[in-house]
Amino acid sequence: MNGGWGWMPSGWIFPLIFLVLMVVFMVLLMRGGMDGRPMCGGSHKTLGSAETPRETLDRRYAQGEITREEYQQMRNELES
View 1 (cartoon, rainbow, N blue to C red):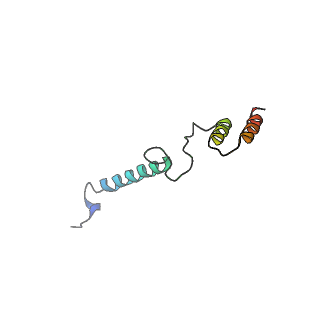
View 2: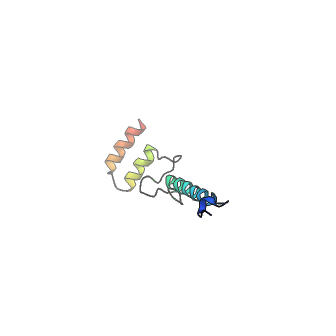
View 3: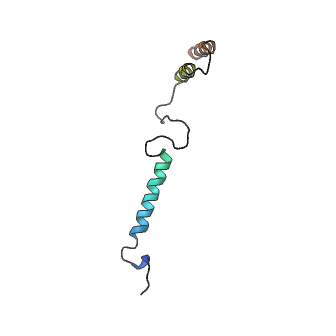
């Protein structure tokens, strides 16, 4: 009698389960984890919700990254 998992009638089940779990794990890694956010920094926006240039400008001004004068100048450039 040769022992081992390969000779059992159901010996293919455990490698199949392992393979399925690995594929699920890789898909979760690619999509950004369990909660949908990227796991390693990066943008937290999804593909369908990209920020418009005006929204980016508004956000930067609200966070104090640019001055009021810079904001008004950039906004005028965007509108023209």
